[in-house]
Image 1: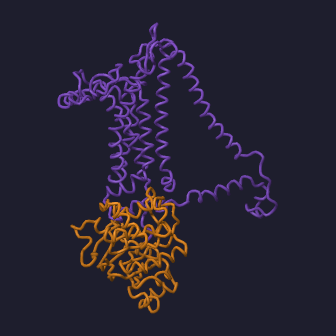
Image 2 (image 1 turned 135 degrees about the vertical axis):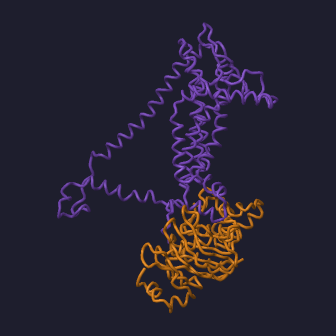
Image 3 (image 1 turned 180 degrees about the vertical axis):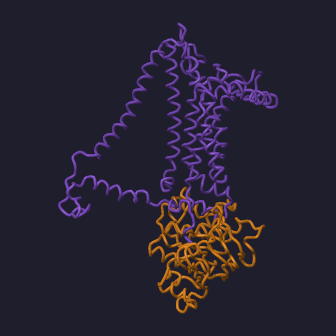
Length: 363
Length: 258
């Protein structure tokens, strides 16, 4: 009777089994390692030890391992500090040489004798394209993940999941080339259509040319972040305790209601983490956007006209012919990108932290 | 608010494996019926067939007929969610929704049925928690997570969640097996009160518990591992535990096997 194949009956409602099950084996092996050889002799008192307790070791695997982990942890801090110092040291002279306002100037000509460059348009394009990409990718990704975890027959789910992971393995330059040469055609046609019928909306207005637009860049980006968000949220959905799913079903929930009552709330922190990873990739994506965007400098919400630029794409496009000040300016823009990503990450942490009372007891 | 449950020739499978065979049994309204028997004899499978939770598992299916007040719950036109709303279930391990507060847990079933008015939800939550003997312990912290309660409180919370939708029948699958004796006693007391309103069917491994709480007892058993479970004897609890008519039942309740 009770032997029905529950997928994770124990995961039920947050017992303490993980910590409990670790205590004994870990402690036991440590004792074994520290016990002097003499007590292990056959016919002796066994591992429990009959004689006096052995002294603890001054130096052993335990201590060496602790040192290793400490070194690894410190290395992260050192690397971050080194990057920060490098960026600031290179950026400051260029910012000093800038003859325009770094925040508000719309343009990027740092290689002139009178360097002029502003981050505003690039930061705007970065955030706009990433946000648009997520807006399109997240619902689709969550839909795919729910289908794979809760609707698809197991075999089909595994096969499709593998395909989605394959999509993640496509190099971004390939996405960029495909977007620039092939995907641009349907997007251009669609843009013309949008312009004709919805041109009264500023985002779809303008007189063309259309195609190499924020829309194309964001669509390519959306396809690129789709696999990350999908496979992470699928993992999270699969971890929902069967006990909670059954509780919802037993209350008379349909499958969709079960997903809404048990699976989605349980997976919420995981979904947020997945979206943030996707956003991180979208913000930092370089070559695909350098190839698909129109590369102009100007702040506009128009999505379909040629144009758009991002910090990372601009670095890729401009680095080759940059002089000393030009490189410094690009590094300063990198610093801004770094700050944007940091803010995004901190926000995500804050969202997860706000509900920790509930998520911790669920863990 | 209580209905008669009748099973006739109920056979249930997990894929190719036949877990129970030809179960015939009728449970009267407003009684407590205990299903007892050794592990693997199919009592939980039978219980899960009654609210169609068995078929949730991949490859699982049920044959035969199960009715509540002469309505076939396996009929093609019957909405399975309606069946589960009518026949509530409490599980072996307390399983409150971990992301929900105590209050949200209790009204989860009502919300699924489209109840949105705060006043109705408040009233229903208090009523269900009072019925589950939990109100006094949690009334000051309804907004706290349900998973933060003790095991026994969590199980009573799950009972409150189940009875909040006012089902006709309440199924309990070893509801006390994860609980300490005091919490067990609290839940047994609760069953006495609940049978005024509901038909209760409980699976238990604890024969004292079956003897204490139930009016009728059904004894399930298997010949050997791999055979389907069968209903061996079904009678008044007092008769089963004092003077069973089948030798096998007597062997089991006196501890000679199983």
